[in-house]
Structure formats: structure tokens, C-alpha cells
Amino acid sequence: MKRRLFLLLVILLIMAAAGPVMGQIYGPDQTVHGYGRQDGTYVQPYHRTVPDHDPSNNYSTQGNMNPWTGQMGTVNPNNQPLTPAQPNPYGRQQRRSWP
Image 1 (spheres, rainbow, N blue to C red):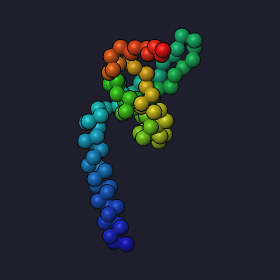
Image 2 (tube, one colour):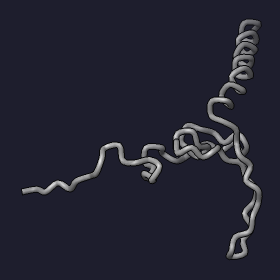
Image 3 (cartoon, one colour):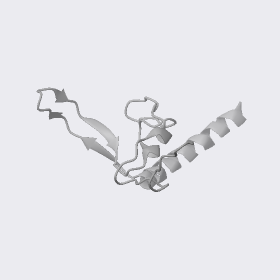
């Protein structure tokens, strides 16, 4: 019992020490204030990660958890569409013509 308690304490201390470090690696969260859309709907305030064109560190990505809501991510980062800031790494795609 003492060994389990000690192990739990060590794990908690490691997690507490890693929290600020991970915050520095991934950057701070942004608070988006509530706003009204042109169609009259109101968008509630929310938190998000700082935009950086990396889909792997977003709250909605599989394997990540939103610390504000406790929800697990569901988006597969490998199926993200390419954006102008993220050019196609394979160059221009060519169609293959079959004989």
C-alpha cells in the first residue's frame, strides 16, 4: 500500500512539473470572446489553441483532450486538407493515364 501511494505521489509530481513545460512548448491558449454573427446568432465564448497550421496539437485531434471541456478529440490529423500555408509536400500531382 505504501509503495502504491509513493508511486502515485511520484506520478503526480511529474505531471505537475510537466504541465508548465508543455504549456511553453505548445504555447498558451487563446480565449475567443463571444460575438454575434450577421444572421443574428450569438457564438458563446470559448478557448482554443494558438493557430499554427499544425493539426496534431489541436484540441479536436484524436489523442488530445480539451482541458476546458474534458472532451477527447475526434479528428484524424492525417485527413486534414492542405492549406495555402501548408503546400503539397509531393509537388504538383499528376494524373496517371492508363493504356
